[in-house]
Length: 204
Image (cartoon, rainbow, N blue to C red; front, side):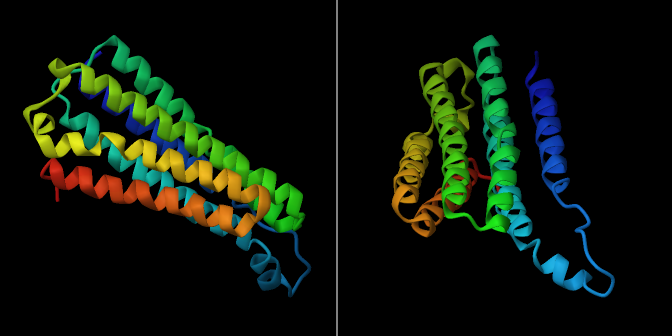
Protein backbone atom coordinates (compact mmCIF):
# COMPACT_ATOMS: atom_id res chain seq x y z
CA UNK A 1 0.00 0.00 0.00
CA UNK A 2 1.27 3.48 -0.84
CA UNK A 3 1.25 6.38 1.59
CA UNK A 4 -1.40 8.14 -0.48
CA UNK A 5 -3.75 5.17 -0.18
CA UNK A 6 -3.16 4.96 3.56
CA UNK A 7 -4.01 8.63 3.93
CA UNK A 8 -7.08 8.35 1.72
CA UNK A 9 -8.38 5.38 3.71
CA UNK A 10 -7.67 7.09 7.03
CA UNK A 11 -9.36 10.31 5.93
CA UNK A 12 -12.41 8.27 4.95
CA UNK A 13 -12.58 6.65 8.37
CA UNK A 14 -12.37 10.04 10.09
CA UNK A 15 -15.07 11.46 7.81
CA UNK A 16 -17.43 8.56 8.51
CA UNK A 17 -16.81 8.79 12.25
CA UNK A 18 -17.64 12.50 12.35
CA UNK A 19 -20.80 11.77 10.37
CA UNK A 20 -21.77 9.08 12.88
CA UNK A 21 -21.21 11.48 15.78
CA UNK A 22 -23.80 13.93 14.47
CA UNK A 23 -26.36 11.15 14.08
CA UNK A 24 -26.83 11.28 17.86
CA UNK A 25 -28.96 14.36 17.19
CA UNK A 26 -32.60 13.38 16.82
CA UNK A 27 -35.83 15.37 16.99
CA UNK A 28 -36.94 15.26 20.66
CA UNK A 29 -40.37 14.17 21.81
CA UNK A 30 -42.36 17.30 22.64
CA UNK A 31 -45.82 18.63 23.12
CA UNK A 32 -47.07 21.26 20.71
CA UNK A 33 -45.79 24.65 21.77
CA UNK A 34 -42.96 23.18 23.90
CA UNK A 35 -40.28 22.48 21.28
CA UNK A 36 -37.83 25.02 22.71
CA UNK A 37 -38.03 23.40 26.13
CA UNK A 38 -37.49 19.95 24.61
CA UNK A 39 -34.49 21.24 22.66
CA UNK A 40 -33.01 22.74 25.82
CA UNK A 41 -33.16 19.34 27.49
CA UNK A 42 -30.90 18.02 24.74
CA UNK A 43 -27.95 20.11 25.95
CA UNK A 44 -25.97 17.00 27.06
CA UNK A 45 -25.96 15.73 23.48
CA UNK A 46 -24.75 19.10 22.20
CA UNK A 47 -21.94 19.33 24.77
CA UNK A 48 -20.81 15.74 24.19
CA UNK A 49 -20.90 16.26 20.42
CA UNK A 50 -18.93 19.53 20.47
CA UNK A 51 -16.21 18.01 22.67
CA UNK A 52 -16.04 14.81 20.61
CA UNK A 53 -16.02 16.70 17.29
CA UNK A 54 -13.14 18.86 18.49
CA UNK A 55 -11.34 15.75 19.74
CA UNK A 56 -11.77 13.75 16.52
CA UNK A 57 -10.98 16.82 14.41
CA UNK A 58 -7.73 17.38 16.29
CA UNK A 59 -6.76 13.72 15.96
CA UNK A 60 -7.42 13.94 12.21
CA UNK A 61 -5.26 17.06 11.84
CA UNK A 62 -2.48 15.42 13.80
CA UNK A 63 -2.74 12.12 11.92
CA UNK A 64 -2.82 13.89 8.54
CA UNK A 65 0.26 16.04 9.17
CA UNK A 66 2.24 13.25 10.83
CA UNK A 67 1.71 10.68 8.10
CA UNK A 68 2.21 13.29 5.38
CA UNK A 69 5.62 14.01 6.86
CA UNK A 70 6.74 10.38 6.59
CA UNK A 71 9.03 9.43 3.73
CA UNK A 72 7.67 5.91 3.41
CA UNK A 73 5.44 3.33 5.09
CA UNK A 74 5.67 -0.43 5.59
CA UNK A 75 3.40 -3.31 6.59
CA UNK A 76 3.86 -2.88 10.33
CA UNK A 77 3.08 0.81 10.11
CA UNK A 78 -0.08 -0.04 8.19
CA UNK A 79 -1.11 -2.36 11.01
CA UNK A 80 -0.38 0.28 13.65
CA UNK A 81 -2.45 2.77 11.68
CA UNK A 82 -5.37 0.33 11.53
CA UNK A 83 -5.22 -0.11 15.31
CA UNK A 84 -5.10 3.66 15.82
CA UNK A 85 -8.14 4.13 13.60
CA UNK A 86 -9.96 1.34 15.42
CA UNK A 87 -9.45 2.98 18.80
CA UNK A 88 -10.57 6.35 17.45
CA UNK A 89 -13.80 4.88 16.05
CA UNK A 90 -14.71 3.80 19.59
CA UNK A 91 -15.28 7.43 20.61
CA UNK A 92 -18.90 7.46 19.49
CA UNK A 93 -19.89 4.93 22.17
CA UNK A 94 -18.66 6.82 25.26
CA UNK A 95 -19.93 10.08 23.73
CA UNK A 96 -23.42 8.58 23.57
CA UNK A 97 -23.05 7.25 27.14
CA UNK A 98 -22.04 10.66 28.49
CA UNK A 99 -24.90 12.42 26.71
CA UNK A 100 -27.46 9.86 27.88
CA UNK A 101 -26.34 9.72 31.51
CA UNK A 102 -26.11 13.50 31.82
CA UNK A 103 -29.72 13.64 30.62
CA UNK A 104 -30.80 11.11 33.23
CA UNK A 105 -28.82 12.73 36.05
CA UNK A 106 -27.77 9.60 37.97
CA UNK A 107 -24.32 10.28 39.44
CA UNK A 108 -23.12 6.67 39.40
CA UNK A 109 -24.07 6.27 35.75
CA UNK A 110 -22.43 9.58 34.86
CA UNK A 111 -19.25 8.41 36.59
CA UNK A 112 -19.20 5.15 34.62
CA UNK A 113 -19.81 7.03 31.35
CA UNK A 114 -16.96 9.48 31.96
CA UNK A 115 -14.56 6.72 32.99
CA UNK A 116 -15.47 4.83 29.80
CA UNK A 117 -14.64 7.95 27.77
CA UNK A 118 -11.38 8.31 29.71
CA UNK A 119 -10.40 4.71 28.98
CA UNK A 120 -11.04 5.07 25.25
CA UNK A 121 -9.07 8.33 25.15
CA UNK A 122 -6.24 6.70 27.11
CA UNK A 123 -6.04 3.80 24.66
CA UNK A 124 -5.99 6.22 21.71
CA UNK A 125 -3.11 8.17 23.24
CA UNK A 126 -1.22 4.97 24.01
CA UNK A 127 -1.57 3.87 20.39
CA UNK A 128 -0.05 7.17 19.28
CA UNK A 129 2.83 6.45 21.65
CA UNK A 130 3.23 3.09 19.91
CA UNK A 131 3.32 4.98 16.61
CA UNK A 132 5.95 7.41 17.91
CA UNK A 133 8.07 4.58 19.28
CA UNK A 134 7.92 2.58 16.07
CA UNK A 135 8.86 5.53 13.86
CA UNK A 136 11.62 6.45 16.30
CA UNK A 137 13.22 3.04 15.69
CA UNK A 138 12.80 3.06 11.91
CA UNK A 139 14.67 6.04 10.54
CA UNK A 140 14.24 4.79 6.99
CA UNK A 141 10.57 5.83 7.23
CA UNK A 142 11.33 9.39 8.34
CA UNK A 143 11.58 12.41 6.12
CA UNK A 144 14.33 14.97 6.64
CA UNK A 145 11.88 17.22 8.49
CA UNK A 146 11.26 14.44 11.01
CA UNK A 147 14.94 13.86 11.63
CA UNK A 148 15.59 17.24 13.22
CA UNK A 149 16.17 17.47 16.96
CA UNK A 150 13.07 19.58 17.63
CA UNK A 151 10.83 16.78 16.34
CA UNK A 152 12.31 14.30 18.81
CA UNK A 153 11.18 16.47 21.73
CA UNK A 154 7.55 15.58 20.99
CA UNK A 155 7.95 11.83 21.43
CA UNK A 156 6.60 11.90 24.99
CA UNK A 157 3.49 13.96 24.20
CA UNK A 158 1.24 10.86 24.03
CA UNK A 159 2.41 9.80 27.49
CA UNK A 160 1.47 13.22 28.86
CA UNK A 161 -2.07 12.78 27.58
CA UNK A 162 -2.13 9.21 28.95
CA UNK A 163 -1.22 10.64 32.35
CA UNK A 164 -4.00 13.20 32.13
CA UNK A 165 -6.55 10.48 31.33
CA UNK A 166 -5.31 8.37 34.23
CA UNK A 167 -5.84 11.40 36.47
CA UNK A 168 -9.31 11.78 34.95
CA UNK A 169 -10.18 8.17 35.80
CA UNK A 170 -8.94 8.44 39.38
CA UNK A 171 -10.61 11.82 39.91
CA UNK A 172 -13.92 10.58 38.51
CA UNK A 173 -14.03 7.88 41.17
CA UNK A 174 -14.23 10.58 43.84
CA UNK A 175 -15.45 13.78 42.16
CA UNK A 176 -16.87 13.60 38.64
CA UNK A 177 -16.48 17.33 37.77
CA UNK A 178 -12.75 17.11 38.48
CA UNK A 179 -12.54 14.00 36.33
CA UNK A 180 -14.33 15.86 33.54
CA UNK A 181 -11.79 18.68 33.89
CA UNK A 182 -8.85 16.31 33.40
CA UNK A 183 -10.62 14.69 30.45
CA UNK A 184 -11.01 18.10 28.79
CA UNK A 185 -7.40 18.91 29.69
CA UNK A 186 -6.27 15.75 27.91
CA UNK A 187 -8.29 16.59 24.82
CA UNK A 188 -7.01 20.16 24.91
CA UNK A 189 -3.44 18.90 25.18
CA UNK A 190 -3.90 16.99 21.93
CA UNK A 191 -4.55 20.30 20.20
CA UNK A 192 -1.45 21.85 21.78
CA UNK A 193 0.59 18.84 20.66
CA UNK A 194 -0.79 19.20 17.15
CA UNK A 195 0.21 22.88 17.01
CA UNK A 196 3.72 21.99 18.17
CA UNK A 197 3.99 19.27 15.55
CA UNK A 198 2.68 21.57 12.85
CA UNK A 199 5.19 24.27 13.75
CA UNK A 200 8.09 21.83 13.78
CA UNK A 201 7.11 20.45 10.38
CA UNK A 202 6.84 23.95 9.02
CA UNK A 203 3.07 23.90 8.39
CA UNK A 204 0.96 27.03 8.97
